[in-house]
Amino acid sequence: MPATDPFRVIFVCTGNICRSPMAEVVFRALAEEHGLSSSIVSTSAGTGDWHVGERADHRTVQALARRGYDGTHHRARQFTQAAFADYDLIVALDRSHERILRQWAQHDADDGKIVLLMDFEPHATTLDVPDPYYADDRTFDEVLGMIESASRRLFRQLEPAIRPASL
Image 1 (cartoon, helix red, strand yellow):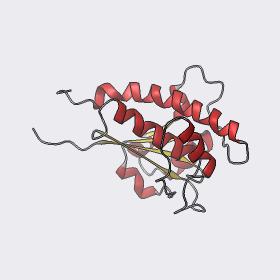
Image 2 (cartoon, rainbow, N blue to C red):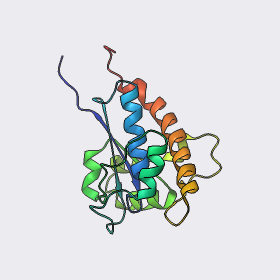
Image 3 (cartoon, rainbow, N blue to C red):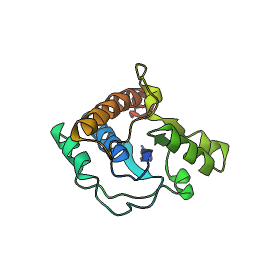
């Protein structure tokens, strides 16, 4: 049986040091937990370039660690128009990111890959995952909780289509 390419998901926020790295790490952990780490690839990027090459914000790493995740290997990068071809699903963390990504989409197929993370959370009081950058540690924990909940729901929707028939 020939190997199939993994389903590739990228999470996008502003600078790729707070929200999108959280989502990347959480989604990767979900794939590992369900035995699908070879079938789903999770990564992240920012719409801006000012943090390229930097580690995730130390508060992001700490919030992830408090919940058992490892965010220490992250290095920020910028999403580019060329990246549309590399991903099956492009997940925006707030509506400003979604607008930017839709402006960058050159084809309907690109535009069709873009979703808003909080659209998967039926009880959400907002469609935007708030940026915790100028806030305290508690806000980072709250944002991570939002991301975990919505990511689990997104994962549950994707899993049946991604799970190999032999599993």
